[in-house]
Image: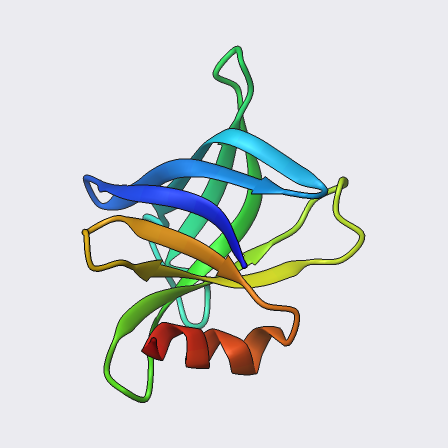
Length: 114
């Protein structure tokens, strides 16, 4: 299920997420300045109408078995009953879609191949 639409901006991504318990029209994936070990590559930030940022997740750079690059994304926050695992995948037109599948980790890899 597609829960977000994004476009590449500088060294991150910008777009929106619309899901049952999460609706944010200003979302940014920003690089982590000093990544260490298994820490995320990007932090996922939401913004209020007053441009105040708040962290809603993290993303890790991955490569599918088919060799396609994607971001493994984990979203979490007080409006969610449990963390959401999804994948940010580039589309043929150059845009990016945030795709959620209930069977998260295994499906993430399969979705990135498509």
